[in-house]
Image (cartoon, rainbow, N blue to C red; front, side):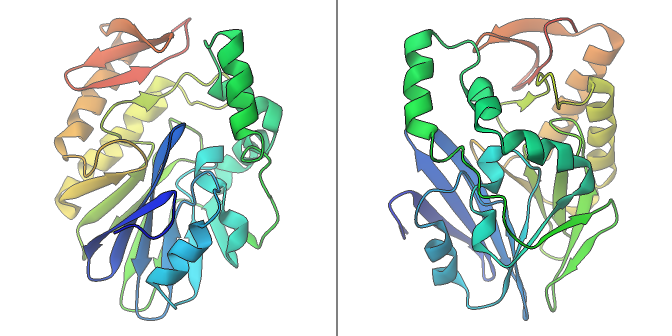
Length: 269
């Protein structure tokens, strides 16, 4: 069903909703997990008009925001809600992505000058992130108690130092943000991505938990993602670390490729 111009909602089960933010310049996935007493909102997109109203149509419960990481396309509507959480390791990342000049540089890397100017105009308001709000920071052992529903934080640094996944063991659902996506994972950001070895360890952590979830719900692209993608990312990351990876180029970025996925890396890797 469609509830606002930019947002499309899919009910995944009786108390879990996927909210897709889709425009000509971006696509992202947020999730609303409802318990008996509270609701957990995983990510808030770029911050287009209508996001809060879309969420409020789905639940009357108090809403807690939990970010998979602090990139601009995941924190844009944080300020619309009363309680906001992300991993303490991403506090520097949050500061970077609150800087419109920095995020424009990320969005327009490898683009020709006319395209950079167009993207600047189209995203200028969205890149002015409202950083106000009641912020809290979790570590590696946070569990959100929603009333009859528990959601665990699984630390998966790589894309950023504070990347996390959220695990609902009872529903057997893993919400992966940008740590596991259908298309690829980006580790090339000079000021914020972690080394491939760190990402490899994160995938080992997810593989060790594979019996706790049936499917992966990502932050972008197609959904859900099969659990076997974790094995492919794990293998690809290991090949990068071992020096045996096969490299190509995508969107002007160097990347290692393995079966269905790719991992972008800095040019000097």
